[in-house]
Amino acid sequence: MFNHTGSLLLQTAILFAVNEQEPTTTTPAPVQTLEHLKNGTDVGEKCFGELGCYSVNFPWTDETRPVSHHPEPPEKVDPVFCLYTRQNPTECQRLRYNDSSTYLNSSLVPTHRLYTIAHGFLENGDKKWIKVMTQRLLNISDVNVIVIGWQGGSSPPYTQAVANIRLVGTMTAHLLHALNRDLGVKTEFCHSIGHSLGAHLSGYIGNVLKTKFHLTLGRITALDPAEPHFSQTDPVVRLDPTDALYVDVIHTDATPFIKGGLGMDEPVGHLDFYPNGGENQPGCDQSVKEYMDKDESFFKAIRRFLGCDHVRSYEYFIESIPDRCEFLAIECDSWENFTAGHCFWCSNEMRPEGRLCSKLGLNSIRTVQKMGSVTTGMFPVLPTSMVKLYTITDEKPFYCKALYRVTIRMSGSKDALNHGGEVGMFSIKIIGIKGTTSMVDLFKEQYFKPGNSYTQVVGASQIGRIRSAFLYWRHDTTFNILTWRIVHPTIYLGNVTIDSLEEDSSTTLCPYPEEKLLSGKEETLRPCGKQQEET
Image (cartoon, rainbow, N blue to C red; front, side, top):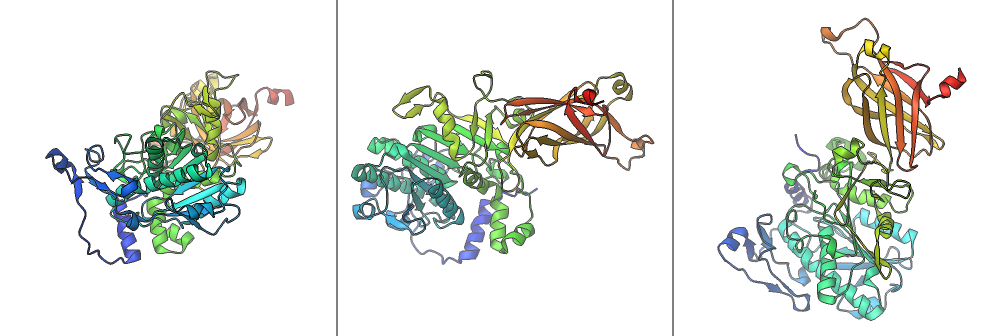
């Protein structure tokens, strides 16, 4: 079955079909391959003056990166650094690292926080998502935003774009160094945001600032960092936690590349978030026709069809600006253990045994500020890195959901034991003081045995303290004559416990008026004991 996050080759073919580019007549640059490396062949370095020299020997070429290019010349890649502030929220003020007049005469405010935003392969700095992110950042705070449009180097082949981000990262680091030197901009207050290849580009910014200028980048947010040519490579080749004081990563397309995924599965930051397990995102299973009905463009629909999971990373991040929802994620060793409820409750004074919890998105920094056990000035020294956190999202905006752990206990009464177990499925609608969730499915269809308990973590709307619930159980009949029955299918319920992560509360509800549930009928659940008080 074809994976909807799709094929890089097909994306490239589509790009050529759309742009109808003329074939190049220039002589191809030397390429280092793993075979060359094994034979001792050295294609040499490529140097670009003050921007430094670029080797393609190990670790830039190895088993996981069998082909490596030098970056193209700066005048070819020619990244466009567009500054946006509240004074100029929509008009690009182009900055150049080697022309001080461009930033000395700009609207940049040196004492304000600075963001950089970098796109990925096949994209440019004018993409809609970048404009939306820029405006949201400016709306919530008086900041500086620099969009890195490296479209001069992001075209196919992919391996050349991979090489070009080394140069773009260096040029961006030179710009931030110039702003620090001439305007007093503190790089510790700079936050680099990058999607796909742009995530690793952000890592190069931090690495060059550190190794060449002895400056420290404050934060990197990596939005589904690209996997091809970066997975299982040396840390200097890819993004890693040493590239900034704080590195947070959102993984949304971590299916192996050979099966169609574009993003990395391995953790590469201080906090690595895996919404919905980090692979197949809800709502990304639509057909090309369904996307065409929305976008009214064949090529847009194809791109969306192929890259839906990959782009969810920046959609989730954008939704976290401003902070309208908790968007909590929980530390856990695997998606399976998370959904089974083995990792629940946030660590706090009342629950010291709890797990690390963090908001996904812009405000994950608040968790870092709490984590820092040792501080250097204003910045915490993180006691840990590569922490994996999981959460659940909706299939469409608003993506953010509250997390609930639902435990269904089957009755072990005499009637239940005499009746025996049943095969079926449960759904639940939770009622709180602030609203009601939609009906949420629980578990896959399975056999429910009397006296046993079944637990699952689900996502639903935030409704405040839980008051009651409706539970729906259905037994699906088949055309197998051996499963036909005269008596209506029933199951016996003991109680249901609903734990709310956001409310840090636990509520146990019992069926009303009796423990016997009929298939296809909604059952009212109330706090245990209340039904007796009312009879």
